[in-house]
Amino acid sequence: MSIQSAGLFIAFEGGDGAGKSTQAARLSETLESRGLNVLRTREPGGTPIGEKLRSLVLDHGHGTIDARTEALMFAAARAAHTHQVIRPALKNGTVVITDRYIDSSVAYQGIGRGLGAEGVSTLNHWATEGLHPDLTVLLDVDPAHGRQRRTAGDASEDRLESEPDAFHSAIRHAFLDLAEANPSRYLVLAADDDMGTLAAQILARVDSLLSELAPREHVPGGCP
Ligand code: TYD
Image (tube, rainbow, N blue to C red):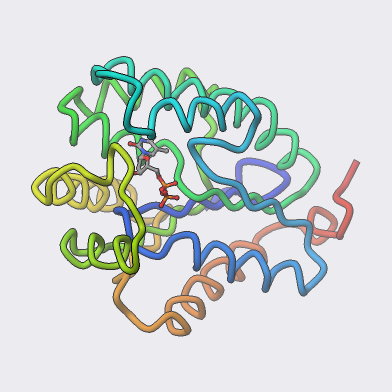
C-alpha cells in the first residue's frame, strides 16, 4: 500500500454503538505516549461550522430534512473538516484519527436513505478533493446490540440513531460491502470482541503502516 500523504490518515467507521470513540481514543493515547503528533477528530464536526452543521442535522426538532439535504449537510461539514483541519495536519506529519468519514455518508445516506452509494461517493470525493483514509477500521456491530449499548443508562438517540433496526442492518451491510471492495485499506473487526483485544489488533495494523513511512515523516513536530 502506498501512503498518500506525509502523515497517516485513519478513519473509524461502523454502526451506532460500535465503540468507535473508545477505540479511537485508545489508539490516539497510545500513539501520543510514543511521542507522535496525533489529532483525534470526529464527523460531523471538527470545525466550528461542522459542529453547527452537526447539531442541525442530528438534533430532532429542525423539521423535516430530506435525504439530499441531509447528504449535503454531512458533505459540507466534511469539506470544511478536510480543508481546514485534516489536510493541513497530514501535511505537517500528524497522525489524523477521525471518528467517521466518507463511508458513513455512503452507508447512511447512500444505502440507508436510498440515495445510492455511487452518487454519495461522488459527492464526497468532490467535497474532499479525493482525500481517502490510509486505513479504515470498521467495527462491525449487530444493530440490536448497538442499540443496547448506545441506550444504556438514559442516553437519548439522535435523528439517525432512532431509525429502526432494519435501517441499521442495511447500513451494517453497506459498510461490509465497502470493506470487501477494497480489503487492503480496511481492518474489519467484530465490535463485541474484548476491548483490549480490539485495541491490540488495531495497533498492530497501524504499526505496520507507520513502518512503511519514512522515519523523518514521523518525528514529533512533523517535517517542514
Ligand atoms: P456519531 O458521532 O457516531 O454519534 P455519537 O457520537 O452521538 O454516538 O454519529 C452521529 C450520527 O450521524 C450517526 O448516527 C451516524 C450519522 N452520520 C451520517 O448519517 N452520515 C455521515 O456522513 C456521518 C459522518 C454521520
